[in-house]
Length: 176
Image (cartoon, rainbow, N blue to C red):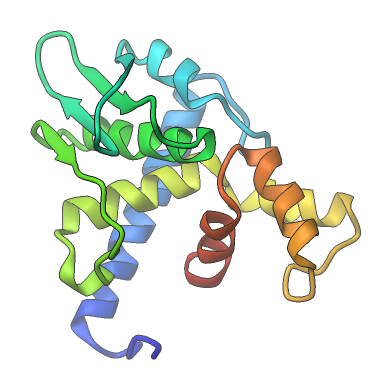
């Protein structure tokens, strides 16, 4: 079931995605990164003065807004998930959200059921890790059409950007 492009919820989500994309560009430039290459989100956190800690915790991650901001990431999650979670928590930092805890969820709520801060942090993370120009370049370099790429080809591109395959596919389907 696709979202109604004329509903206020859809328009709000589009505005949040645009805001997340714009801020990801600003942060990439501030960190001295281009708008094409994959990035190390942990290096960006370091550049912005946000400490990242990997903990043996049963959650996705946590952002601690304090005089010494910190992101806590579960060391129990797969690498690609840790990368995205770190970028998501960094989104909370750059948008001046308060401290947050993101619990493990098997039943990911629909965007319309999620708080705007979470949608914004997800959009920021997706565009920070998978910039539109970078994805276009990755597909072009491999002579691939994103609409016809095989699962193995999508997986290779996802690995190139340090994200999960479903994260890449969702980003292509809903944001790019």
